[in-house]
Image 1 (cartoon, rainbow, N blue to C red):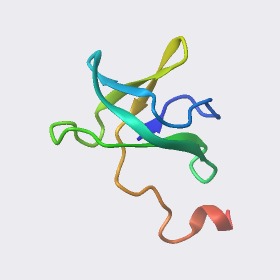
Image 2 (image 1 turned 180 degrees about the horizontal axis):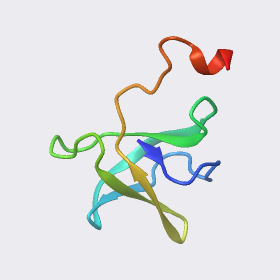
Image 3 (image 1 turned 90 degrees about the vertical axis):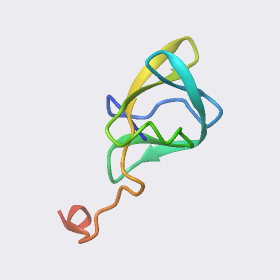
Image 4 (image 1 turned 30 degrees about the vertical axis):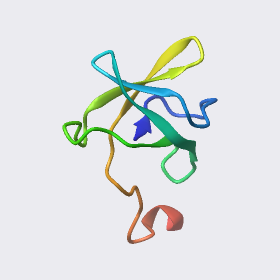
Length: 83
């Protein structure tokens, strides 16, 4: 999943992931993705939660918006590295 708003967020794993206000999973790991310019997280979600679904992650005293992304975010042609 990718978190909205660009930039680094202080998350490391274990934070609750919500869909429609209900907790549906917990982050397994998270880090800043330099090639996509956003914080990325890995989470196991129910099969009913598909790509593009909006989610929220509990980050300390607030919730950060995010989106369920593709299994792998990568640049197969390397175009971003050459830009």
